[in-house]
Image 1: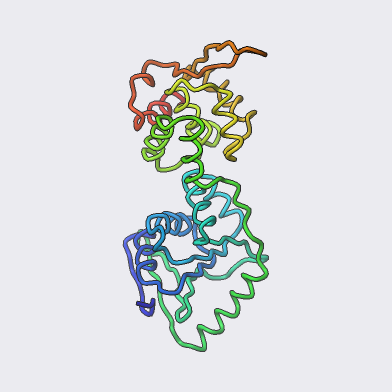
Image 2: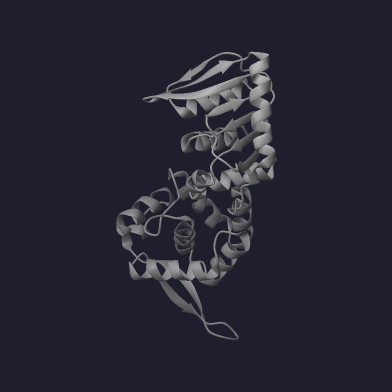
Length: 274
């Protein structure tokens, strides 16, 4: 089934889902809102191997804002790695919010909470629009997505730190709508340190893993550990080694955290950091 008619939905996520269901030849999304970028990432992740290919041409500052959320960015990185998603930033500003297929141009229109994709399949018009934005795509710069794919994060966490820590990481991640601490809340480094402390992991091990996989530098892990320690969320104990200074084992530092299940950990930590 091709996308040859108007589409209406109660929200952006519903519209994106409809477009994915109807697509047979891939989607080219131009000048989307942040909600559309998030919706495309979420729906494409759920579709998995059945997802149509998607190209997104969007303002660089908008992409940066959306992809500052580790949850969105790590899923997007998986989609990029599997050649489902391609992100580029244009040289100039795009005038319209559009979705293009081989046969249809759809204008994205919001009205309160509702959203619509209004279709035009006039061949001459479609050809003119495609020519304009294919040229813009060719001239655009690839977006440098530095966040590692979530699949690689999970796989290496289980291999290098332990499956129990990976399972707790999954539980905490599934309890969150976003992972963008902005320096105060639950960001990806805080999340990793909390699940490491829940499993008595060495600071050296979790920070080395985090740097190797591309989450953050060991220095960032160390600074975040110090902040959490100062706020009473984590403790450390010294573990002697044969040569050199003792390593630090991470421990949860508050009874409320120690008594929380993994899927409650983020909520409790957020309340303690408030």
